[in-house]
Image (cartoon, rainbow, N blue to C red; front, side, top):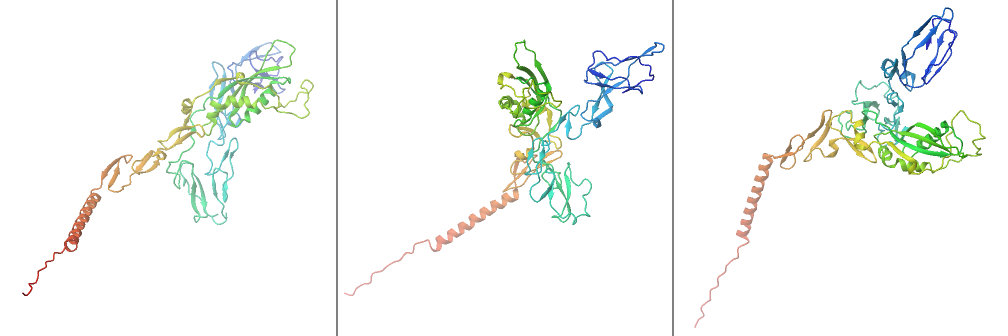
Length: 448
């Protein structure tokens, strides 16, 4: 918005080479100008007095905000757009958006729900389990709110973004609902697996479609119709159509229009999104355009009036894999560079086609040897070695074994004592009951 110092303006012209709209000066000397792109330019305004013909060139500072919402614009933090006078304001995204201009909506299922609560892609966590209340991510027992109304959680009672509430079942004591990684009651000891966070927004998955229709549809209609079909695929990962342009054909009297559409999809770390986009997307798109969307009381498009609201039911001709082309796709080894296991050290990224990327603790993979107990602390996993039999494990991972001398000699002397008693018993048995008795007989002399 520019304010003129004089009302003696004789003419108003658009700026050459700019994709913009120029509105006439208002009566109060205000000029409204709405840029339509972030391409670099230098704005100069020529003001000429109608009275004496004197002129002056003004080069105002131009700051453009391209954030999704005005409240996200940071006009005090800007960057130059090329070698021009245009400055682009930075954006402060809220928790539901991401990207340089907050143009992408975060998947509400990236943050895991309460145990045994499912997440609906694009919507969020379902209801809490029976007898529990909450938003599906944080659930607590149904309680009499007046019983513990004078109790409150101490400051910073739960660690690592745990949610604290007063539990009636535990005598109005503070209780924590912890993020999935933690195993103790106050969210300090980790060890469970969890979904990684985004280190840097990964590039989009991009495909190009060649479509045909005979309804004389507009570019807006085609855009809305393609977005509707791609947005209802089995895995919801569609972001937008970056380009929708009609392919000019040699005039042949045919009413068929051909369209070139470039569509973008978002990679997400959780669930089967990555496997779907890399291995199943093209087949799913072909199947989506095999389905025909029927309309009641269909009117030929040449006779139907144009609506200001684009329609999403354009019927396209079926397509095949030859009508689809990969533009951008990232493999798993490349994608893992865009996600991180923030928080506790020692977690590693693991990939599974069904569950996506998961942060896995060494404690869940037998990190401690010889029955050692594993605890994942902020600086990494630690093992508590547990003695067994005559052995005492030791070492960072309980990988070494040593004999316990007390137990060893106790077993040795016990075994020797048992052998001694067994020998004495055997001797006694053989001495008194085991030896055969000898008898002698003498013949009596008979009288002659």
